[in-house]
Length: 251
Image (cartoon, rainbow, N blue to C red; front, side, top):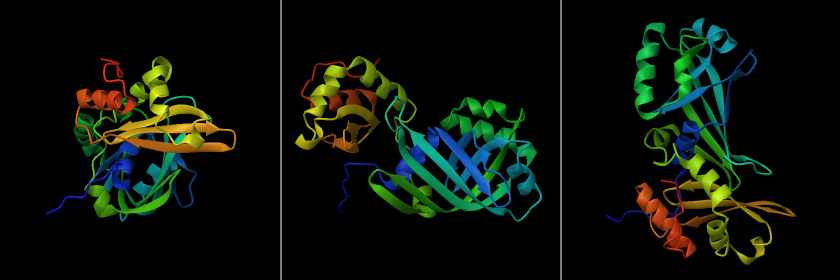
């Protein structure tokens, strides 16, 4: 059987990753003000979210045993200061349910094993957990918008480097102008006049945001093959830049 080869994460993988490193998120239910969300954890076709205990979302959901329609909006921003920091927007639509108080701590411990987040410590101290059963998912990037079936989202995993990507991008931007410059030489000629900044890094390649006089453009430089660990990632970056002996990532 022939296996499809890709040079970028699928839309489902991008959504999974964005939910692990949210810059901001809000939960909307009919008749209530948007509720700020602290943590979003995807498990199969469900999203477990932490919201203020005294917010409308918790109050409205607690009064509806059958659940209520809701939309979760997630913003993924670059970890460095860009002219426009937003990398993607995600919308998850579905039915919102309360999580029994006696199960919240147990679920939080399970979530923390694969998705450590300081926000989980607020559970029971001003924050409560709700569960969104996802019906549809949409992601919008500079390349356009795409709808992702809930079954596909359930089968996807976040990028293996999601936990460290922000620090690595900041490191490249502040300490490795030489490497960024070498990589920029591989960009299309018409984009080289703009300011080239690292935007994202995953197992398939590196993305750049080019801030030009006429607007911003996002470009991906793919690796020769997907990488699976930090050593392979650092080597792939150096090879892509034509600098095999340059140290590109922090230890």
